[in-house]
Length: 296
Image 1 (cartoon, rainbow, N blue to C red):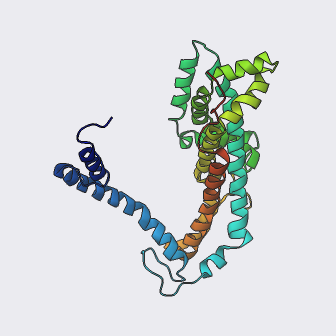
Image 2: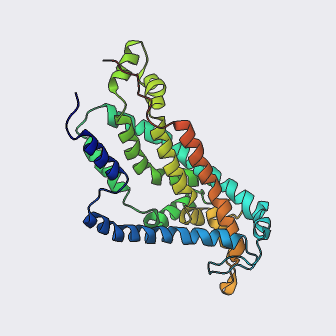
Image 3: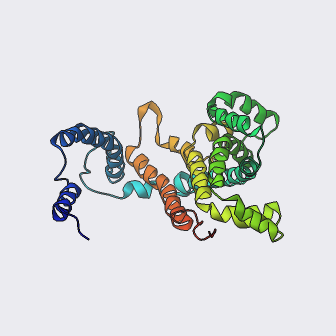
């Protein structure tokens, strides 16, 4: 059964989809919004253009300009074990270690908060949330004194544990929210089959929230990868410092800066994070694997 005005309705919907049916006032209202978005986009694109142009310019300065002759001399200059490879390896050890320790601790702390009801859950969660508001720079003086007394200064494992402790509050909050999305009935079915609580957590809950675990891992990894202040204070040996600290080597005395090498180093410094994004996005899938887990 067809309704009257069917072709007219189809024509109207087609015009709306192609932007032909919008009111003039709405089209005029989109102009300032588009201009603001273009301005914001330019604020992000211009520094990236400087990185690309400066890395290919042997005489790069602080201005964004096309190189007179493209050259890979800046990349060749920074591709040395002392300038790039060892700092990147130290950054990877610190970031991966911090993210791994934080993820394990966050899962174990979020599981009882998500699965067991208690009158202390809400105050504890709010306490965790308040803990995220305290910057690490505010406690670095007593932390430095503690590291000196315990003789942990210039120790990468101790620095990993401290950075994991600073990232743990937000990681617990995020992990708990992801874990709430996994139905408890799936764990109850595993318990009926004889699985223990830790077995159900490992075999049922964690596989179903792997995308959320990937998000938490990436969040902590990137937070640690770009952290400058904590490794700068706690790691004294140049052989143990990450790339975020060794970037100081491109800033010479009396204001002299190797702009071209700095741009090349910055590009290479960003590549591992981009690769991590791609690997985790492919491995985690597009959504939680809950489809078909429950019937009825």
